[in-house]
Length: 526
View 1 (tube, one colour):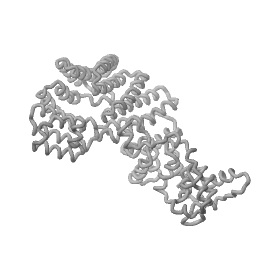
View 2: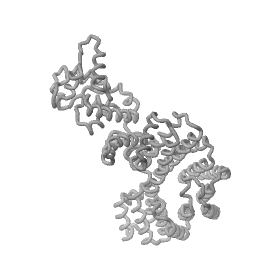
View 3: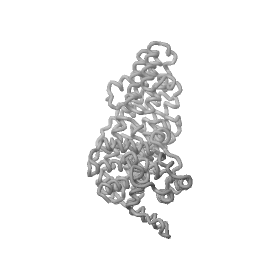
View 4: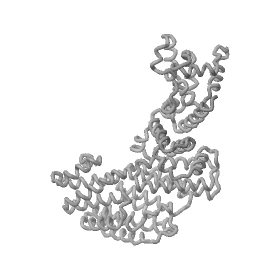
């Protein structure tokens, strides 16, 4: 085999292996390879299966004990070159190859050349359909696209369909000139959720990429450096959420979470390394749950949060356990399950007492404040909020990275929502103004949420021009951040302005909302 042909076979063999692990059928893999290799269908399927011509010839001849097949490698190459050159493959051979390649014989020739076969051969080709023997076809009868997964079942997003794989191939080709590194990025991005993962993987050095790929292939033992790489990716994923939001990040976090979960089940690790990897899995589970929550997919968000809680309990880390209870409480609060909010708040309080962290206390008090506000207990809610604000001023020395966001401004951002819920618009306006003055606007989601709540409070106070101006600012942020919670807050704020829908201010706002894909009709339905 010529060196160039061998390199092509090696490349497509690797692609095929990774795509099969992702649930691709042989037909889908051939479709992907066709985008980068302009060869006949007959050769496409051989490349998809990662077989040399000699391998295929041996299988064909072994399947004919009488020896009448007598296929030779040069003749197979002739058949694979047709119709541009070579010879037309006979129908019985197409049927035999269809069985080997687990496809339909019709897929092995171009539709434009199928008519060149006679009626008897045509009938033989039509009957030779072995797609049912493809285990991936029977195991996954329906295809799940990246967009569908992110919109409906974000926590389960791990499959990459053919179109997503094509985008990934083009993206790796555009981003990386070195062929070897391009193959490595393709392999890693397949595991970590598709082309969206390329931004995350960009922070790795070539050595880290090689090590990570080796660990995932099970050709490299999990060691200190590999664990550090997973930790590095997890921290970067948290930072990416602050910039862009859940829509593109969720498949990546789920891919990484699934990979770490498989390594925990597969690897026999030293206790210290296992604990760190388990900690990473718990953090990724919390992040996946939070991202689904930010997309308002509450049922889906619960699964990874509970997975993270189990992992944290297995690890025995009171800080991480308390953190999981906080987010489960936040989830319950948005679903108006007040009793569950109190349950998680008290569990968090118990674990905070055992934790060295000083930042669990404000989280506990914030949950209590939310629960009291839901019950209409204004005084109790205000007391708990003030306690949370005071506790959040604790120094952050030796605090885990996942608590970096707990600060007075972050706690204060909840005050406007609480006061709106308690029907105190003037207090909510003052709280929102204070937050927007003191807090860094680079945290786009929180900034947009406060602007939307500010607008609601202004509408309650009948300050319509100012309310529409603030809501337009919030709408602008949706073009930079994909938080569904932010879009929902904007919808609620716009609903408050409905009595003034015919005014110039609201009509101008509606034009802005339409330009951002947030039409008044959508807002009203939300």
